[in-house]
Image 1 (tube, rainbow, N blue to C red):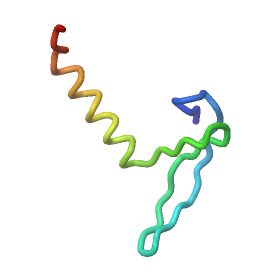
Image 2: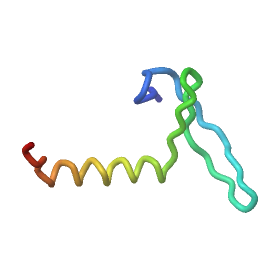
Image 3: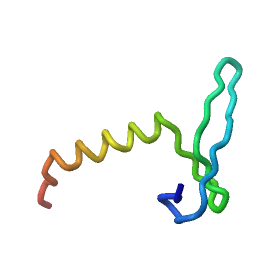
Length: 57
C-alpha cells in the first residue's frame, strides 16, 4: 500500500489499548497511521465537501 501523505511504503501493524486490539496501516517513511475509522471519516468529509458548495467571499 502507498502512503497518501508521502507516497512511502505502508505496513500493517498491530496496535493495542487496554481493552482493544486493532490493526492499521502505518507508513514506515513518515509515520502516518490509517485505520478503518480514519478511512471512513475521510470518506464522509470528502462526500460532504462535494455536496455543499463553497461560499463566495
